[in-house]
Image (cartoon, rainbow, N blue to C red; front, side, top):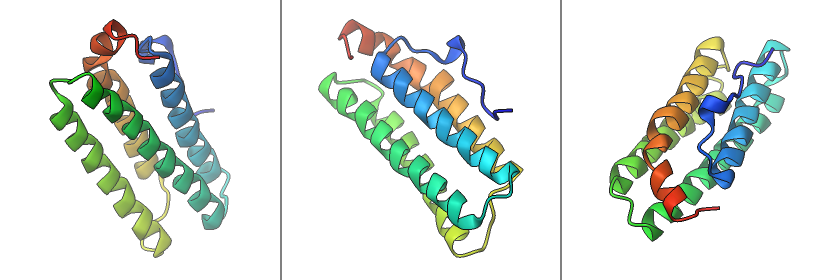
Length: 135
């Protein structure tokens, strides 16, 4: 069973953003599945690396439109992105160093972060993106 079940409450109505969010959900679910199956650290590290890289690309996509559309909360949202990336990179370093493992606690953090990112933070710019026909 997936850790994070996608449903219509997560849809922004912006195709590019929704598709990216679905892919982030898929990464979180793959990481969770790998943890549950006891995959080796190396395999989990590859999935974690993919999640981090894709999250960075997703944030850059959003931020490009923040700048282009003069989003009034851009600075706050970018700071939120920066903080999250810092947390995940810190976890990744500890994981690579063997100081932490991928656990239920980490998976809950990732799930909660992603839900908050979509339902609270990203919903704040949906109207602006729709008004400006962001694909």
